[in-house]
Length: 273
Ligand SMILES: N[C@@H](CCC[C@H](N)C(=O)O)C(=O)O
Image 1 (tube, rainbow, N blue to C red):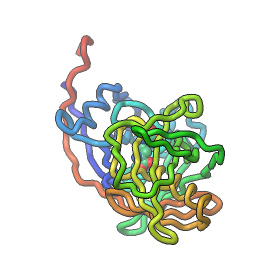
Image 2: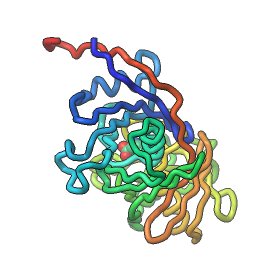
Image 3: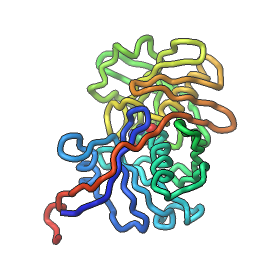
């Protein structure tokens, strides 16, 4: 058995297990991630946030002293970026005394992100957003939409729908693997007032989640394309997020840490322990 210090937090009920691995010694396997994120056998979460010093990430070419958010989906797969995760990560670093300034620069596989702590809310510079107007089919059962592809550092396909409540997201939406060879997060967006939409999401590597920060940015970019407007409130199952689209995207929302403790990880199969 291995004993690791862990925390758990969430941002609009998109929840994460958090570990600190300053020197990159823990190297969680896909099985470790699946165990930690398992809601029955483990702790439970939509993903794992590993806090590691950026100098231990070979592909990082920025400031080596930054904290790097090594993000893994609940199935163990890597993602470039997580918008709710990065706020929870910033909250955790601040509460642990690992970052003391209200402006926290964070390395991610999508590039540098800066979290601004504003009391209960955290605002994050989400970097550039690229929208591909060439539509792509998304299928769910016998329904099909012409979705817009949006890159927020990670890939998204955004569908415009009449009523998000009618969707059955217990199964994965079908998408073009040619267009999205690394998989895709799929957002379903319903406009409810001039600058407000509702959104449900099926996340790559997880399934339906109660919120997706990068997904809300993708939804806002699609809403600007369809209806005009740079500022959007996106209502998700787990709360509300505010998006501003300017030179880059800004995501504002809550983030809380709800648990700190120790977890006993099962030994990996077949090795010397
Ligand atoms: N929930 C996240 C996104 C997490 C990664 C995503 N599932 C992917 O594989 O790209 C968010 O808040 O952005």
